[in-house]
Image (tube, rainbow, N blue to C red; front, side):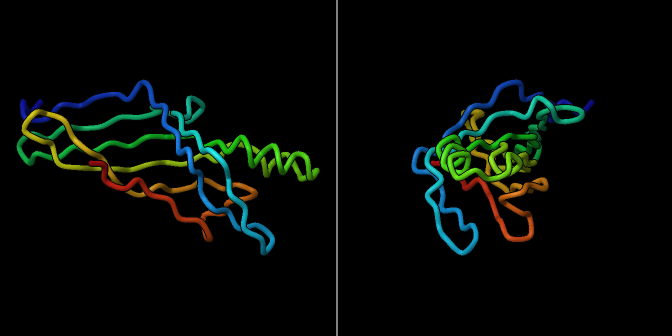
Length: 132
């Protein structure tokens, strides 16, 4: 194995977006409320893995994640919609970033949604933007 390349497993991920996102459904916009992001432990294979390539100073990772919208799910439940619309959204996050001198890195990249009753991959885009 190349000494400049370090493979790793992602074993924990817990993130939240307190402001949520705007969701359009049946011609109406809804504020999702807080959004939570966790590793999808039910994904086939590894939940998350990555590579640190020190020869190119690049970090890459792929995570299988579950995105939940608890407040929006409660609203939709109260409206009596199908349970498939209130389930967490499953997605694959592929990200990369520069390895900094102190060995830290900021990852950003695209998020590919798996089929879901409310947020269809054809009409929904998601990404992780670079941090600071």
